[in-house]
Length: 429
Image (tube, rainbow, N blue to C red; front, side, top):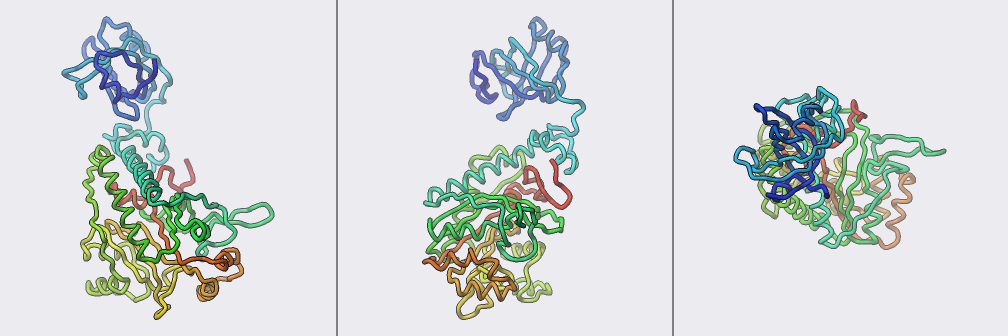
């Protein structure tokens, strides 16, 4: 008999089924024995009467929480079981023991410290709360891919080992590469542009690394980016694409993860498009109207982003037309004011979840901007060269997967939204 999931077994009243999973809890009431069994789909009560041979097996095994068992039995209606169905077992097989006591409560009733949960992440995944976070993250990823595939975009796979900085700066992890030095990629930026100027519409989901030493609730040293690049498109065109993608993702999460959102106590709203578009200067004026000391040309701090969001009162909105000093060398400057570039950030629930720009597609201008940024054009020769053979105008953006998961699920620490987070202090598991 083939194993089926518990939620499927509940629909088979009167039928014999084979289920397996983890022991959630056991209890004896008089001569009756009860086991609550859990798998990825849910849980079910196993009721063992005193005349059932399985009763002696349970007595001999003395099952503990998280022991793994296989049960064959008949599904029957129940007036007392939580799901109104139970399984009357005909056989029970122990597949594996769990070490006791458990380092954390997988039911989630007793809260554990974050470090403990991360140290025993495989157990933490079994808690309703953490399980819900990553089931939502799965829908975010699948919705992102679905949306862009349906829009005619092609998924690509750029390298994660690079020869020089993608965006300048010193925030790279250096690694030995045979007789050379290489780096872990801080961005797929240059490669997705190379693909877009041939395939026109591309997207990817890739890990990136930044060797930043600060340790905050919104930063990790390894994250996953959901990136898009589109040829024959300016910044406004890809901003429209981004807001449509965000709405599609949130709509799918709301529809497909209602159970998980309920577990997390989240009631998310679908943003109305088009989203508001503030200029950087507009945002600065909002801050200074609140008495904030702020110098035009600086970046916004996380508290300042939240303050802007509170004043705007929109759940999601753009800040566009940034100072060139705040954006990478490849951001296209305005012709009438090269100190401002065609760049934008998307804020959602007071947190920046995405940024993008119209890219420079003219090699001479790229060389000029590299020099202005204090970078050596020779280090980017392969990149600059690719725009010498008929490169169209193009634009793109990137969404931080963990950041978006964090805002949708309402978590306060990004480590909750990364399966195995990497920061300055954590390298295992």
